[in-house]
Amino acid sequence: MHLLLQILVNGVLLGGLYALMALGLALVWGVLNIVNLAHGSFIMLGAYAGYYLFTKLGVDPFVALPISMVSLFCVGYLIQRNILNLIARAPMFNTLLITFGIDVVLTYLAQMIFSADFRTTNPVYAGDNFAVAGITLPLVRVLACGIALALTIALWLFLSRSRLGRAIRATAQNLGAARLYGVEPRLIYALTFGLGAALAGAAGDLYGVVSQINPYIGATLTGKSFAIAIIGGLESPLGVVVGGMFLGIVESLTALYIGPTYVDVVSFGILVLVLIFRPNGILGATA
Image (cartoon, rainbow, N blue to C red; front, side):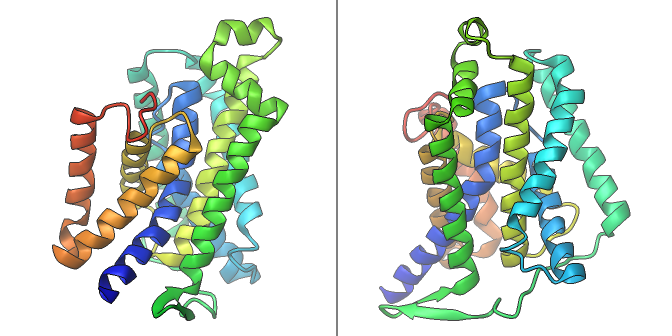
């Protein structure tokens, strides 16, 4: 029983980070109708930003979080403004091809610049743990999960309470009506894509602390983000959190009872089942 509780807690902590990874993808998908296949590469770039800020400048990875987010926001804003806005509202297949191309370019640029070596952001407290009711909690994973949930709540408040957030939601729900109220769609698209990239940058910074990174992690992380967005739905950040927690717990239980080799098999098997039996996501949102 104690082992099961420990595994469930580990799954929840992992799920919080997963939710942050998927949040940017779900935001861009829901507003721009773009399934951004380069999303994982943005996470990879955020991880390298955190790694080099820590190893070259001595900036703690949690302190470096805003720098990674601002850097990736600029990358995302420029890509949307100068490339993706040229095909705004084009068929989804076109945007899939273009974002796939961007993913390939970013991956090979990262390989040329950073090399293919595995790296980890490893602060002195990386191995610290503490116990609550007999359950061991890794300090870094608790901090990463807490920040991920805080950013998710901040995004929900931003979208529901701020003027710009309401403009983003209006653009997603009714583009024609949003234009009548003075919303400039191309600017909203660029800001939304930049915001999605910034969230990916934050997720990457935290991912580099809890796992190894290399230029090729993007494809796997895009797949997991896609699965979480489908499971949780696209309309609410809460749904993405539920999807992330669900996937994190399932992966932890799979690693314990079946074997680590089958983690991705089970994760994407669940995605297939959700698409067949619950295509609108666990919370019933539009997918």
